[in-house]
Amino acid sequence: HGNGYQETGGGHHRDGMLYLGARASLADALPLHIAPRWFSSHSGFKCPICSKSVASDEMEMHFIMCLSKPRLSYNDDVLTKDAGECVICLEELLQGDTIARLPCLCIYHKSCIDSWFEVNRSCPEHPSD
Image (cartoon, rainbow, N blue to C red; front, side):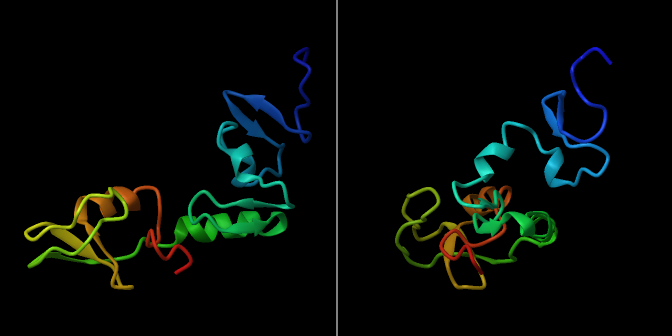
């Protein structure tokens, strides 16, 4: 026990993770390099999944809900005419491009929204939906 860490409670570091004892929750056992940026100067945190600000006492439930929420489904299609800019890659959506149309009717390059959905579960332009 000469390492200066308590075995239960109080929080200690091990293998780059923060552990807060026997009653640690999912959110308490996050990588140290991720956890600090979630916390805002207010009493809450910014969810890394949906980017919403959430009160500290609601953090764990919100985090679990976000992780369990399925990503949006979309229809894919081939553009028959140019359709402006893809806000993910900032390139033009051109005739012949394979696009994804979300339920909110926003469209993106299919490859762009697939990459976006690897780390997000909402429309880039409608994050609260």
